[in-house]
Image (tube, rainbow, N blue to C red; front, side, top):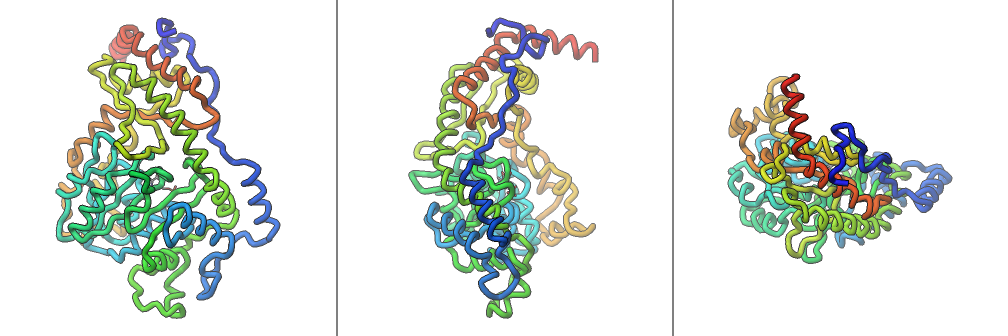
Length: 436
Ligand SMILES: Cc1ncc(COP(=O)(O)O)c(C=O)c1O
């Protein structure tokens, strides 16, 4: 098979079937939603200083389940992880002039949550083994304005949370966790999401457990929890009646989750251990196969860490395969598989940071911090991220049921086929570049 013509060059692809959707919605979710619809109460929230402030029984049941699963005192269900990030960052009481250290290799909301408070994100580089924020780089970024660290447990592998917590404690900073991609990941049995002051989960359509759109903040801190609830539900008109005197960052929005979403999320959380085991089995199989292929390195799992594989990453060495990464990825895709070159543009290279325009035309909140200048977000500040994005990193999401280990064998065969056809691929690329 590896000798046959590449699909990219007009041959037959290895996989001819469309990729199945990741769809783990079963009868339990359907029954749970039907019960909500039958009840007629599609949302239990109202911005009143009474029980309705907390969302009612369906929301409370989901929150209790999160508390039990993660062994924490509080869970606050919201309508997205983005909302949850905003609420949890606001709950730290930071504001204009403050800095939070964030990795640039993450979904944009991990950093914009900081901007929403009037503080600014300062980007630290990542660790090239696990792709999460590097404690050594964080330490170099600490200034007198630094208030906290946002760790993102990327792709399903926990960041070096113990080291980050120790660093945060040493410098009197808070540690927050964006755990959107890593529910049930752990370090020596301690679940990610429980190392920081608070953490957030996502329940969006693409996550391992989903309810359409949704998020949950967890924390052991009573004040943080109360503030997140105020942010969720128009807090400014509730604080007086609730007797809350410290009103810093209690300006609320409508971050309320509906009962239909909570009902689905609750069923999904029950099934999360099984979903996770299935992904780990598929990812381990794929890792074992690609480990045999020179030039492709499967993801590192640090000793004692549990990786839950939101994505399966691979590092690529073009010097070994002889094929530039982006051409290699296109050729594997043509064989009928999903593979991506790089993850996201390092966040600091986005116009938001390059132009430093956020609220209004005058550069607030960047302008509120005299430390920020053109160098703060210049290309080159995080060389590991830039190398991974531009040269070394690939990822696939194809580690979910109903995909099987034999499907993944086909994927590994496709990788081998592309490498075996290197000369034809390079000759074609050279001919095309001459034409162009
Ligand atoms: C690391 C990370 N943080 C935050 C989010 C935002 O999640 P949501 O879509 O629930 O707002 C995502 C979603 O892609 C994510 O991957």
